[in-house]
Image (cartoon, rainbow, N blue to C red; front, side):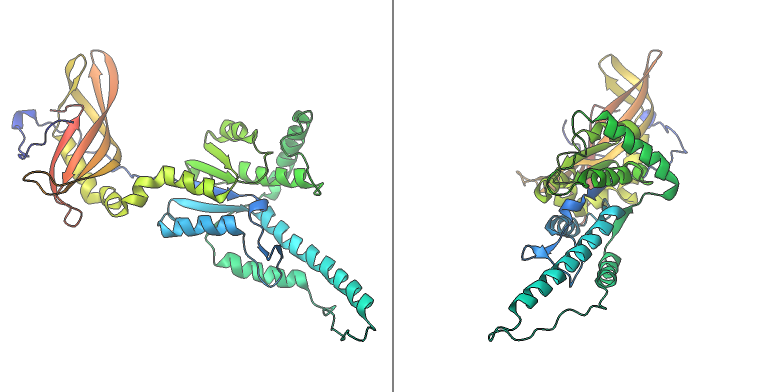
Amino acid sequence: MGRFKRSKSKKSDKKQEITDNLAKTQYNMLKTLIVFDTNVLRSTEAGQVAYRFFAFGKPFQLIEEYINANHLNEHIHLAVPSWAIEELKDQKNRQYLEDVEKYKEVTERLFGLPSFQKISLPQEEFDCRAYIQEKADEFLAAKQLKKLDIKEELASTILKSMMSRVLKEEKLKKPFAHSGKYKDAGFKDNIVWESLMHYDDVGAYDKFIFITKDTDYGNCQNEFKEKWNKHIITLKDENSVIAEILKDYELYIKEKTLYDYTHKEYFLDYLNDELKQKSEIVTDTGTVKIENFKIHEPSVNIERMPPAEEEDEYILVHSSIIIFYKDGVNKKQQEVVMTTKLADEETKEIIETTYNIELT
Protein backbone atom coordinates (compact mmCIF):
# COMPACT_ATOMS: atom_id res chain seq x y z
CA MET A 1 0.00 0.00 0.00
CA GLY A 2 2.99 2.29 0.49
CA ARG A 3 4.17 4.45 3.37
CA PHE A 4 2.13 7.35 4.72
CA LYS A 5 3.72 10.76 4.36
CA ARG A 6 3.07 13.45 6.94
CA SER A 7 3.44 16.25 4.42
CA LYS A 8 0.44 17.05 2.20
CA SER A 9 2.29 19.53 -0.01
CA LYS A 10 2.11 19.06 -3.80
CA LYS A 11 4.62 20.14 -6.41
CA SER A 12 3.07 22.84 -8.53
CA ASP A 13 4.45 21.45 -11.78
CA LYS A 14 2.54 18.20 -11.18
CA LYS A 15 -0.79 19.90 -10.60
CA GLN A 16 -3.35 19.41 -13.32
CA GLU A 17 -7.01 20.30 -13.32
CA ILE A 18 -8.65 17.35 -15.07
CA THR A 19 -11.97 19.09 -15.53
CA ASP A 20 -13.87 21.95 -13.93
CA ASN A 21 -17.32 20.61 -14.63
CA LEU A 22 -17.17 17.15 -13.12
CA ALA A 23 -20.72 16.31 -12.13
CA LYS A 24 -21.25 15.41 -8.52
CA THR A 25 -21.80 11.67 -8.36
CA GLN A 26 -24.50 10.27 -6.12
CA TYR A 27 -23.19 7.21 -4.28
CA ASN A 28 -26.00 4.86 -3.43
CA MET A 29 -25.58 1.65 -1.51
CA LEU A 30 -26.92 -1.55 -2.98
CA LYS A 31 -30.73 -1.34 -3.16
CA THR A 32 -32.48 -4.62 -2.39
CA LEU A 33 -36.12 -5.67 -2.69
CA ILE A 34 -37.24 -8.66 -0.62
CA VAL A 35 -40.42 -10.26 -1.95
CA PHE A 36 -42.47 -12.62 0.23
CA ASP A 37 -44.46 -15.57 -1.05
CA THR A 38 -47.83 -16.35 0.56
CA ASN A 39 -46.54 -19.43 2.38
CA VAL A 40 -44.06 -17.38 4.47
CA LEU A 41 -46.62 -14.70 5.30
CA ARG A 42 -49.24 -16.86 7.02
CA SER A 43 -49.64 -16.02 10.69
CA THR A 44 -51.16 -18.46 13.18
CA GLU A 45 -51.96 -18.58 16.89
CA ALA A 46 -51.12 -21.84 18.66
CA GLY A 47 -50.80 -23.42 15.23
CA GLN A 48 -54.29 -22.40 14.14
CA VAL A 49 -55.78 -19.57 12.11
CA ALA A 50 -56.41 -16.49 14.24
CA TYR A 51 -59.33 -14.19 13.43
CA ARG A 52 -58.98 -11.41 15.98
CA PHE A 53 -55.94 -9.87 14.25
CA PHE A 54 -54.24 -9.67 10.88
CA ALA A 55 -50.47 -10.03 10.72
CA PHE A 56 -47.68 -11.61 8.73
CA GLY A 57 -45.84 -14.64 10.01
CA LYS A 58 -42.53 -15.11 11.82
CA PRO A 59 -40.24 -14.94 8.74
CA PHE A 60 -41.55 -11.48 7.85
CA GLN A 61 -41.40 -10.28 11.46
CA LEU A 62 -37.78 -11.36 12.00
CA ILE A 63 -36.53 -9.93 8.71
CA GLU A 64 -38.34 -6.63 9.34
CA GLU A 65 -36.88 -6.43 12.87
CA TYR A 66 -33.36 -7.10 11.57
CA ILE A 67 -33.63 -4.37 8.93
CA ASN A 68 -35.01 -1.86 11.44
CA ALA A 69 -32.40 -2.68 14.08
CA ASN A 70 -29.56 -2.09 11.60
CA HIS A 71 -31.04 1.07 10.05
CA LEU A 72 -31.29 -0.48 6.60
CA ASN A 73 -34.80 0.74 5.78
CA GLU A 74 -33.53 3.18 3.17
CA HIS A 75 -31.60 0.46 1.35
CA ILE A 76 -33.78 -2.64 1.76
CA HIS A 77 -37.47 -2.60 0.97
CA LEU A 78 -40.04 -5.31 1.66
CA ALA A 79 -42.62 -6.25 -0.94
CA VAL A 80 -45.74 -8.38 -0.89
CA PRO A 81 -47.83 -9.41 -3.91
CA SER A 82 -51.32 -7.96 -3.58
CA TRP A 83 -52.60 -11.39 -4.56
CA ALA A 84 -50.92 -12.87 -1.47
CA ILE A 85 -52.65 -10.37 0.81
CA GLU A 86 -56.03 -11.17 -0.72
CA GLU A 87 -55.33 -14.88 -0.39
CA LEU A 88 -54.47 -14.53 3.31
CA LYS A 89 -57.70 -12.63 3.96
CA ASP A 90 -59.70 -15.18 2.01
CA GLN A 91 -58.10 -18.08 3.91
CA LYS A 92 -59.12 -16.53 7.22
CA ASN A 93 -62.69 -16.00 6.08
CA ARG A 94 -63.03 -19.52 4.65
CA GLN A 95 -61.59 -21.06 7.81
CA TYR A 96 -63.97 -18.98 9.96
CA LEU A 97 -66.98 -20.29 8.05
CA GLU A 98 -65.73 -23.86 8.39
CA ASP A 99 -65.09 -23.43 12.13
CA VAL A 100 -68.57 -21.96 12.69
CA GLU A 101 -70.16 -25.02 11.02
CA LYS A 102 -68.03 -27.38 13.11
CA TYR A 103 -68.95 -25.42 16.23
CA LYS A 104 -72.66 -25.77 15.41
CA GLU A 105 -72.31 -29.53 14.86
CA VAL A 106 -70.53 -30.04 18.19
CA THR A 107 -73.08 -27.88 20.01
CA GLU A 108 -75.98 -29.86 18.57
CA ARG A 109 -74.42 -33.17 19.59
CA LEU A 110 -73.81 -32.02 23.15
CA PHE A 111 -77.17 -30.29 23.59
CA GLY A 112 -79.43 -32.02 26.14
CA LEU A 113 -76.70 -33.57 28.26
CA PRO A 114 -77.00 -32.75 32.00
CA SER A 115 -73.44 -31.48 32.05
CA PHE A 116 -73.90 -29.28 29.01
CA GLN A 117 -74.75 -25.64 29.47
CA LYS A 118 -76.19 -23.80 26.55
CA ILE A 119 -73.57 -21.82 24.70
CA SER A 120 -74.53 -19.01 22.38
CA LEU A 121 -73.67 -19.46 18.72
CA PRO A 122 -71.83 -16.83 16.69
CA GLN A 123 -74.12 -14.12 15.38
CA GLU A 124 -75.29 -15.06 11.91
CA GLU A 125 -75.25 -11.42 10.81
CA PHE A 126 -71.57 -11.02 11.78
CA ASP A 127 -69.55 -10.23 8.65
CA CYS A 128 -66.19 -11.87 9.27
CA ARG A 129 -64.84 -10.87 5.86
CA ALA A 130 -65.44 -7.19 6.61
CA TYR A 131 -63.88 -7.58 10.06
CA ILE A 132 -60.76 -9.22 8.58
CA GLN A 133 -60.57 -6.48 5.95
CA GLU A 134 -60.63 -3.83 8.68
CA LYS A 135 -57.84 -5.56 10.63
CA ALA A 136 -55.79 -5.99 7.44
CA ASP A 137 -56.14 -2.30 6.57
CA GLU A 138 -54.97 -1.31 10.07
CA PHE A 139 -51.97 -3.64 9.88
CA LEU A 140 -50.88 -2.63 6.37
CA ALA A 141 -51.28 1.10 7.10
CA ALA A 142 -48.58 0.79 9.77
CA LYS A 143 -46.10 -0.98 7.45
CA GLN A 144 -43.68 0.37 4.87
CA LEU A 145 -44.46 -2.11 2.15
CA LYS A 146 -44.20 -2.24 -1.61
CA LYS A 147 -47.22 -3.93 -3.14
CA LEU A 148 -46.86 -5.93 -6.34
CA ASP A 149 -50.05 -5.46 -8.35
CA ILE A 150 -51.13 -6.90 -11.65
CA LYS A 151 -52.61 -4.12 -13.73
CA GLU A 152 -55.76 -4.78 -15.69
CA GLU A 153 -54.19 -3.59 -18.93
CA LEU A 154 -51.56 -6.33 -18.59
CA ALA A 155 -54.05 -9.13 -17.94
CA SER A 156 -53.95 -10.44 -21.51
CA THR A 157 -50.16 -10.38 -21.67
CA ILE A 158 -49.84 -12.13 -18.33
CA LEU A 159 -52.38 -14.80 -19.26
CA LYS A 160 -50.40 -15.61 -22.41
CA SER A 161 -47.21 -15.78 -20.36
CA MET A 162 -48.80 -18.16 -17.87
CA MET A 163 -50.17 -20.39 -20.62
CA SER A 164 -46.79 -20.47 -22.34
CA ARG A 165 -45.03 -21.42 -19.13
CA VAL A 166 -47.49 -24.20 -18.32
CA LEU A 167 -47.16 -25.72 -21.79
CA LYS A 168 -43.39 -25.33 -21.84
CA GLU A 169 -42.90 -27.03 -18.48
CA GLU A 170 -45.67 -29.62 -18.77
CA LYS A 171 -43.33 -32.62 -18.87
CA LEU A 172 -41.22 -31.39 -15.95
CA LYS A 173 -44.24 -30.54 -13.79
CA LYS A 174 -42.36 -27.40 -12.81
CA PRO A 175 -42.44 -24.59 -12.21
CA PHE A 176 -45.77 -24.17 -10.47
CA ALA A 177 -46.88 -27.76 -10.23
CA HIS A 178 -49.71 -28.21 -7.74
CA SER A 179 -48.91 -30.25 -4.68
CA GLY A 180 -50.60 -31.46 -1.50
CA LYS A 181 -54.21 -30.56 -0.81
CA TYR A 182 -54.13 -27.27 -2.72
CA LYS A 183 -55.08 -28.13 -6.30
CA ASP A 184 -54.92 -24.47 -7.32
CA ALA A 185 -51.43 -23.94 -5.85
CA GLY A 186 -49.79 -23.91 -9.26
CA PHE A 187 -52.10 -21.19 -10.51
CA LYS A 188 -51.53 -19.08 -7.39
CA ASP A 189 -47.75 -19.47 -7.67
CA ASN A 190 -48.04 -18.28 -11.25
CA ILE A 191 -49.91 -15.14 -10.19
CA VAL A 192 -47.34 -14.33 -7.51
CA TRP A 193 -44.47 -14.76 -9.95
CA GLU A 194 -46.09 -12.71 -12.69
CA SER A 195 -46.73 -9.85 -10.26
CA LEU A 196 -42.97 -9.70 -9.67
CA MET A 197 -42.10 -10.09 -13.34
CA HIS A 198 -44.30 -7.07 -14.16
CA TYR A 199 -43.40 -4.85 -11.20
CA ASP A 200 -43.04 -1.25 -12.39
CA ASP A 201 -40.13 -0.31 -10.12
CA VAL A 202 -37.75 -3.16 -10.89
CA GLY A 203 -35.29 -0.59 -12.24
CA ALA A 204 -35.00 1.06 -8.81
CA TYR A 205 -33.28 -1.98 -7.30
CA ASP A 206 -29.97 -3.74 -7.80
CA LYS A 207 -30.84 -7.05 -6.20
CA PHE A 208 -33.95 -9.10 -5.52
CA ILE A 209 -34.54 -11.76 -2.89
CA PHE A 210 -37.62 -13.97 -3.19
CA ILE A 211 -38.42 -15.89 -0.01
CA THR A 212 -40.64 -18.93 -0.42
CA LYS A 213 -41.00 -22.43 0.98
CA ASP A 214 -41.85 -23.77 -2.46
CA THR A 215 -39.24 -25.38 -4.70
CA ASP A 216 -41.21 -24.65 -7.87
CA TYR A 217 -39.47 -21.30 -8.47
CA GLY A 218 -36.06 -22.82 -9.09
CA ASN A 219 -36.26 -22.37 -12.85
CA CYS A 220 -37.47 -18.79 -12.69
CA GLN A 221 -34.23 -16.97 -11.92
CA ASN A 222 -33.05 -17.18 -15.52
CA GLU A 223 -36.41 -15.90 -16.73
CA PHE A 224 -36.18 -12.86 -14.45
CA LYS A 225 -32.57 -12.13 -15.40
CA GLU A 226 -33.34 -12.49 -19.10
CA LYS A 227 -36.13 -9.93 -18.90
CA TRP A 228 -34.68 -7.42 -16.44
CA ASN A 229 -30.93 -8.12 -16.42
CA LYS A 230 -31.14 -8.04 -12.63
CA HIS A 231 -29.87 -10.45 -10.00
CA ILE A 232 -32.50 -12.45 -8.11
CA ILE A 233 -32.06 -15.29 -5.65
CA THR A 234 -34.65 -17.59 -4.10
CA LEU A 235 -34.32 -18.41 -0.38
CA LYS A 236 -36.49 -20.58 1.80
CA ASP A 237 -36.37 -19.05 5.29
CA GLU A 238 -35.63 -15.95 7.32
CA ASN A 239 -32.21 -17.15 8.48
CA SER A 240 -31.00 -17.48 4.90
CA VAL A 241 -32.32 -14.01 4.08
CA ILE A 242 -30.65 -12.41 7.11
CA ALA A 243 -27.36 -14.12 6.21
CA GLU A 244 -27.64 -12.69 2.68
CA ILE A 245 -28.35 -9.21 4.04
CA LEU A 246 -25.31 -9.42 6.31
CA LYS A 247 -23.13 -10.46 3.39
CA ASP A 248 -24.20 -7.45 1.33
CA TYR A 249 -24.33 -4.81 4.08
CA GLU A 250 -21.76 -5.98 6.63
CA LEU A 251 -19.57 -2.88 6.34
CA TYR A 252 -22.56 -0.55 6.75
CA ILE A 253 -23.89 -2.50 9.72
CA LYS A 254 -20.50 -2.61 11.41
CA GLU A 255 -19.36 0.95 10.62
CA LYS A 256 -22.55 2.94 10.02
CA THR A 257 -21.24 6.25 11.40
CA LEU A 258 -18.04 6.19 9.36
CA TYR A 259 -19.77 4.75 6.31
CA ASP A 260 -22.29 7.59 6.29
CA TYR A 261 -19.48 10.13 6.74
CA THR A 262 -17.57 8.82 3.71
CA HIS A 263 -20.64 9.22 1.51
CA LYS A 264 -21.31 12.84 2.48
CA GLU A 265 -20.25 15.99 0.65
CA TYR A 266 -17.25 16.91 2.81
CA PHE A 267 -15.40 13.62 2.31
CA LEU A 268 -16.40 13.34 -1.35
CA ASP A 269 -15.12 16.86 -2.01
CA TYR A 270 -11.85 15.93 -0.34
CA LEU A 271 -11.44 12.89 -2.61
CA ASN A 272 -12.23 14.99 -5.68
CA ASP A 273 -9.79 17.74 -4.68
CA GLU A 274 -7.01 15.23 -4.04
CA LEU A 275 -7.56 13.46 -7.35
CA LYS A 276 -7.63 16.68 -9.35
CA GLN A 277 -4.06 17.30 -8.26
CA LYS A 278 -2.88 14.03 -9.77
CA SER A 279 -1.66 14.17 -13.37
CA GLU A 280 -0.05 10.77 -14.01
CA ILE A 281 -0.56 7.10 -13.23
CA VAL A 282 2.18 4.48 -13.05
CA THR A 283 1.26 1.47 -15.21
CA ASP A 284 3.03 -1.68 -16.37
CA THR A 285 4.23 0.17 -19.46
CA GLY A 286 5.43 3.25 -17.60
CA THR A 287 4.03 6.58 -16.45
CA VAL A 288 1.15 7.97 -18.52
CA LYS A 289 -1.11 11.01 -18.34
CA ILE A 290 -4.43 10.80 -16.51
CA GLU A 291 -7.37 11.95 -18.66
CA ASN A 292 -10.17 11.63 -16.14
CA PHE A 293 -11.28 9.83 -12.99
CA LYS A 294 -14.40 8.55 -11.28
CA ILE A 295 -15.00 7.83 -7.62
CA HIS A 296 -16.45 4.35 -7.91
CA GLU A 297 -17.12 3.72 -4.20
CA PRO A 298 -15.99 6.03 -1.38
CA SER A 299 -15.59 3.22 1.15
CA VAL A 300 -15.05 -0.35 0.01
CA ASN A 301 -13.49 -1.09 3.39
CA ILE A 302 -12.91 0.64 6.73
CA GLU A 303 -10.13 -0.50 9.04
CA ARG A 304 -9.50 0.46 12.65
CA MET A 305 -5.76 0.22 13.21
CA PRO A 306 -4.53 -0.56 16.75
CA PRO A 307 -2.06 1.83 18.36
CA ALA A 308 1.62 1.32 17.55
CA GLU A 309 4.84 2.89 18.80
CA GLU A 310 4.57 6.68 18.96
CA GLU A 311 1.19 6.55 17.22
CA ASP A 312 -2.36 6.41 18.50
CA GLU A 313 -5.14 4.27 17.12
CA TYR A 314 -6.32 5.52 13.72
CA ILE A 315 -8.75 4.66 10.93
CA LEU A 316 -8.13 3.79 7.28
CA VAL A 317 -10.84 4.37 4.67
CA HIS A 318 -10.22 2.53 1.41
CA SER A 319 -11.92 4.11 -1.61
CA SER A 320 -12.26 2.62 -5.09
CA ILE A 321 -11.26 5.06 -7.85
CA ILE A 322 -11.40 4.46 -11.59
CA ILE A 323 -8.63 6.26 -13.50
CA PHE A 324 -9.03 6.84 -17.24
CA TYR A 325 -5.89 7.25 -19.33
CA LYS A 326 -4.51 6.71 -22.82
CA ASP A 327 -1.74 4.21 -23.50
CA GLY A 328 -0.53 5.05 -26.97
CA VAL A 329 -3.68 5.17 -29.08
CA ASN A 330 -5.64 2.91 -26.74
CA LYS A 331 -8.00 4.30 -24.11
CA LYS A 332 -7.76 2.35 -20.87
CA GLN A 333 -8.97 2.42 -17.29
CA GLN A 334 -7.50 1.22 -14.04
CA GLU A 335 -8.98 0.77 -10.57
CA VAL A 336 -6.91 2.49 -7.89
CA VAL A 337 -7.35 2.06 -4.14
CA MET A 338 -7.21 5.47 -2.47
CA THR A 339 -6.54 5.08 1.25
CA THR A 340 -7.38 8.02 3.52
CA LYS A 341 -6.11 8.10 7.07
CA LEU A 342 -8.42 9.55 9.76
CA ALA A 343 -7.16 10.50 13.21
CA ASP A 344 -10.18 9.06 15.04
CA GLU A 345 -13.91 8.46 14.77
CA GLU A 346 -14.88 11.48 16.84
CA THR A 347 -13.06 14.26 14.93
CA LYS A 348 -12.59 12.38 11.65
CA GLU A 349 -9.59 14.61 10.99
CA ILE A 350 -8.03 13.71 7.66
CA ILE A 351 -4.28 13.20 8.06
CA GLU A 352 -3.11 11.96 4.66
CA THR A 353 -3.85 9.82 1.63
CA THR A 354 -1.91 7.17 -0.30
CA TYR A 355 -2.61 5.32 -3.55
CA ASN A 356 -2.29 1.85 -4.88
CA ILE A 357 -1.72 2.02 -7.96
CA GLU A 358 0.68 4.99 -7.64
CA LEU A 359 -0.54 8.39 -8.79
CA THR A 360 1.71 11.43 -9.12
